[in-house]
Length: 247
Image 1: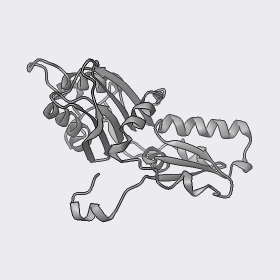
Image 2: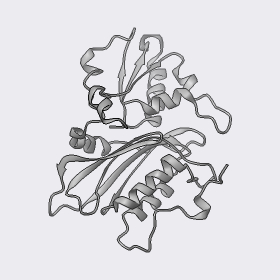
Image 3: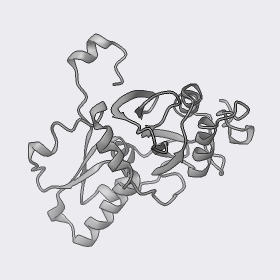
Image 4: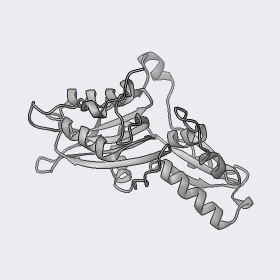
């Protein structure tokens, strides 16, 4: 996924993103406050990761390690965490992750069911997740995603523009029998058919996970509900009081 050039994509495979966090100084860097308009780069790297290695665990106490792991999990509820010393890790843990394969539909569904929504902390990168019943109209879903990732024009209740760094989900699209896998990183996103079909008698729903800055679960869920609305009168565009001012 994410390759604009199909020929290039056939030879280069994105297996997954790995981030290494220093046990002794990681918490300091992850919680460092930045001026308005800037994102903590250490937190951004954790947010983008599919695998997070917490290294040098022998240099900190168990209490410090637990606090760091909790902070990492609050930033990225999707990534797998491994604790290491001297960066020693079995290659089987960091290779063949298949983090972006369409074959991961079933495993992604299991993972999404156990992603906690992190407590909201102003100006921090957090994980937000929700599930919505029904099937989305594909065109409306694309508008919803593009407003978030491309236009970046949706604000939270405090008036701050939401910035989505990472997006994953299993989505039900009207008139499509397969479960759809939605993945996004910054401005890039992809919507692909998985190998799993909806059962005829199953109640369809969509599960989404957002990782980013200034995220507001209630507003995101409200806008997504518009994308799964059955009536044409409802829309996915945000209300005027939810739109960030243009620069």
